[in-house]
Amino acid sequence: MTYEEMEERDIVEFTDDAGNTLLLEVMDYFFYNGEEFAALCDAKENPADDDPDDDPVYIMKVNVFTDENGEEMEEFISPEESMMDKLIQVVRTRFGDSDDEDEEEEE
Image (cartoon, rainbow, N blue to C red; front, side, top):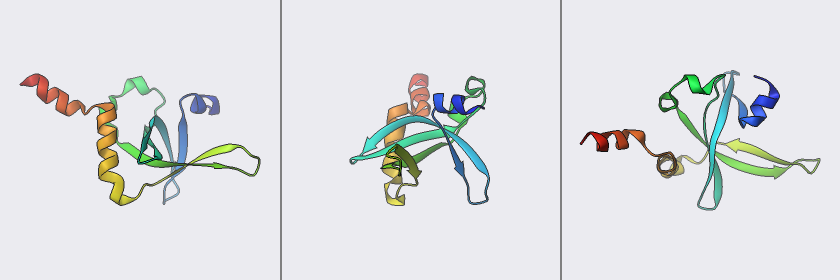
């Protein structure tokens, strides 16, 4: 995947504790209690090939800062554990919990 494709799709590169590279795509930005957060999923070469409902969703807090060149940058950090239940609720509401919709249609 080229750098241009990464920027076009809003893909962010992370490194886990073991030093492995993880590419995540920003699905949506949202605000909760005055703070900005992002919902991210695994970035795929061909996103249309897979069922998005099978992918884990990551929730990260967005910290915006100005670098030494005066350019605005985004930093993604893990939110406080105490907020995770509420943030998960917000994300499920925003994206619609497809499992609940399927159950309602079957009844």
